[in-house]
Image (cartoon, rainbow, N blue to C red; front, side, top):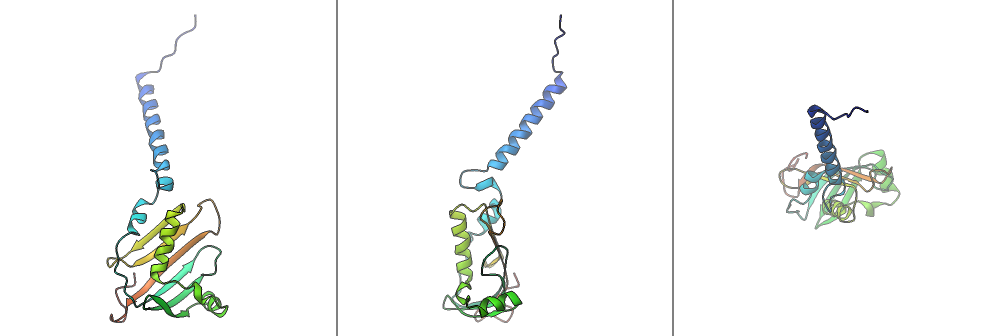
Length: 172
């Protein structure tokens, strides 16, 4: 006769814990409908904060990541909701402007619209950080986390609404 092997109570508990942990990890990776991967919910929600966008302001934009024209560091002046002036602050920025890509320079509103479009069209990751007044300080978009060079990374500093003291509302 063959001996019957039965799991001990300790083995049963270990199996239940392993099963519960595996299930929790699978559910966390799946996220909920409309949230690819379920990750980065807080930064996504942060991008939807209301912000009273002034008609005129200045900011410095560091644009990096990906294979695209808008790469470099720029000082941007917005007047009446449109880019009025731009200065390339590094070699990449100056080169882009020298090659006639002035129309690629965005306002902060256009950067936020890019993030919202990416989110609504199913980008794998969209993160927007803001400071207390609501203006963005960081926007990262990754259309496909498994692809290379499809990202857009923006850092916004030296934001100053028109009429505010030099230095504006923070380096954000």
